[in-house]
Image (tube, rainbow, N blue to C red; front, side, top):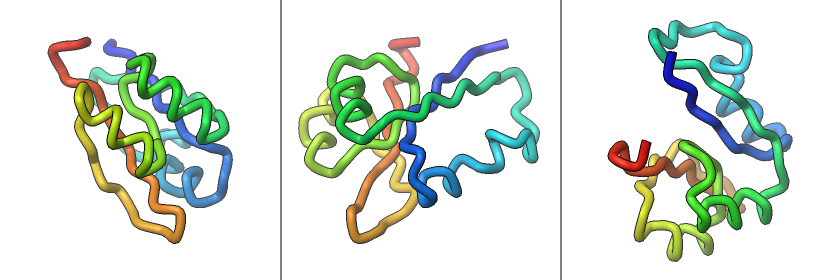
Amino acid sequence: MTLIRLGHSPDPDDAFMFYALAKDLIPTGDFEFEHLLRDIETLNRWAMEGRLEVSAISVHAYATASTRARCSCCRRTSTTRHAVHREASAW
């Protein structure tokens, strides 16, 4: 099994984005997911450090994190956050 750590906030919009994975409602094959609920500032900092494989971050943080991560624009809200993932070669 390959562990993928998902960082997201406990806000309802982030919870909705990751609900199916958290409740094992979709097949994940050889991947195991660990959900880490943190405030967006912590997730922004962790993204800068490359601590998680996938994380929600703010648009402001993406400008810095984009040098070593890719954006998966999962949704758009008034606060506009993005999920980012590290380059596969970093795993």
